[in-house]
Length: 464
Ligand SMILES: Cc1cc2nc3c(=O)[nH]c(=O)nc-3n(C[C@H](O)[C@H](O)[C@H](O)COP(=O)(O)OP(=O)(O)OC[C@H]3O[C@@H](n4cnc5c(N)ncnc54)[C@H](O)[C@@H]3O)c2cc1C
Picture 1: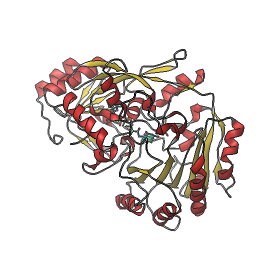
Picture 2: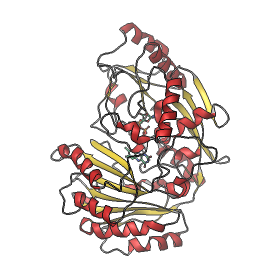
Picture 3: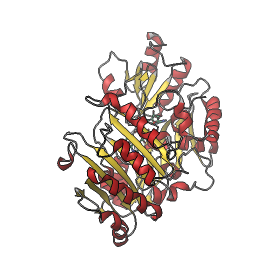
Picture 4: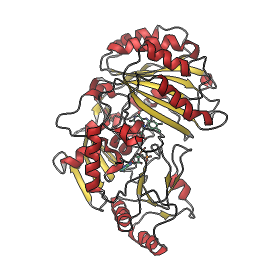
């Protein structure tokens, strides 16, 4: 059933919902609705018929039960960083108020509510010499990211974020609250790790923290005119790096906006991202071949506090309108580099703001023992992400440019991706790309059991 264009519930039903939850219940006519539904991607309309600002897990359970009773399709949003597809109609549960965040240095664990962003975890954990496995931006929500596997900045050293989850508290579409871990409902515990928001609304999560006292990392920015030399060097360099190194490379066409550091505004540059957990001396030595490349525009790589981890990728700190896509990449050999440069090199008029290639492998390729999870991408050698701003003058050219790059990389790019990297797909091919056939079939079987009414159908829901 497609999302509704007009509410499928009556004013009396809405009043019943208001009686059942403590948090705000807002429709498009109410003040605060726009703030409650706002997404990071300004190009994606999130327009539910009603949004519940859940105050606690009881509110989540009550809202889910109400949606089930009235057959109202259900979405969930914490920070809006994953609102890749429009949401029209239905009930949105906002978990933004579920902000419990406790770190136990003894057991090296963190317990977070569903609205917590990575930044809050790091503020609590870094003083104890402990870190969680956030991705490129600590503004992203811990739970939504981890449910999609969670590809961390330190992925090659420590694996996917989902590999370190100890337990979930989740409300399944029948309105039941469940506490699941390796010993309680282990099958559901596995399916949630990588299965995204298909089987329930998570209200809290406990996960392992990793001991790390600082990092050697940052970014080196090279002139765009050197793109061939830099990409070729990166490709060779990444062939045999140890697992202590996580790295990616990005072609950036930066807008003339205040959020861009002054020397980079309105420029085409190549950005190397480097995060190394080895000793300072060793980390510096390993970086040698890339640091030897001439004429860097900027070099911030050095010893750093993990609290400053956002400086490695330098993702936009504020919401922007964009379209994106991502795929696993088999290799970045000379032919792939030429294909990329042909579409997006210094001589092209490529409108894409960012094309990044992240090195996979290392701990990312190893499933933890006993795990029957749905984390995708373990087989990936690299992953490519493409982002274009959907604003004039070039916004209209972005979809074709993304397709053009992926087509040019035919033979190098995989049909598969990770659900967190699916981006703004059109149509039903999304779930086909996000999981292997076997995992998708497991997820569909579980979906039929836990969510027979297909309530959780928004964003990157698995489709038959
Ligand atoms: C700037 C930026 C950088 C990123 N970097 C990385 C990265 O390095 N690595 C990586 O793996 N991903 C990355 N992502 C992708 C990101 O992990 C996903 O978009 C993720 O879904 C964001 O989660 P959220 O809760 O912040 O977003 P939301 O938009 O709030 O949620 C996105 C989706 O997650 C699910 N979800 C969220 N909360 C719950 C819940 N409580 N219960 C059930 N389902 C839930 C739902 O399906 C929801 O539609 C990045 C995204 C952005 C915009």
